[in-house]
Length: 245
Ligand SMILES: Nc1nc2c(c(=O)[nH]1)N[C@H]1C(S)=C(S)[C@@H](COP(=O)(O)O)O[C@H]1N2
Ligand SMILES: [Mo]
View (cartoon, rainbow, N blue to C red):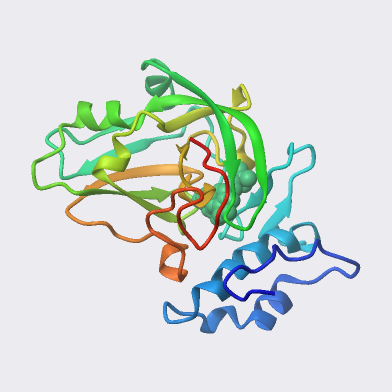
């Protein structure tokens, strides 16, 4: 096996494995930025594949997920209903503000149907996503001239992501409210997740709660563990998948 191109890990077999045992086995606590990207890419895959075996819900295979695998780097994620959800837009903008779910639903909606590609290898063809163009929210906020990038934060309290301002303004980058023509459920990062169509699915932050305009790219959760910040499908992370956009 080429160590630069690890195969997706085997599906879980047999015995349940507890989260503490599993993390201990990996030495996850000791993993740092210096660790090789190859190992890290394997890590995400391993988290995904141990899924069904993990009683803590760290990650799991979604029943009837249509090929999707459930990912969360947080052991538990609070639920946000339509009533208590808020999305904050702030940072280097003239008009910072919060949006309720109803306010997001009232804005013009864009629907895209493209393949989803995870960096560990799994792909789900022709998946509809619908929501508000990120560019529209940025225009409404009034991005200042010194701005260069966006930092995304999540109400799981742990995950983060980033895009350059030019990437964020693409018409195929959505603040998504619907996936597979349904409101996005909790497991898929609802009520609101990011959807970055042309990039590996780790860029599509689930449980989106914050959009902060920044003066430089701040690498996100997986990027601090070795994934590429510019995550174009087929042109990053040492992979050669067919592009999704
Ligand atoms: N908040 C949050 N967003 C996240 C992740 C995560 O662990 N936490 N995992 C990412 C990865 S690696 C993938 S492949 C997709 C998985 O989305 P799904 O659970 O809807 O299949 O979410 C991305 N967004
Ligand atoms: Mo992923």
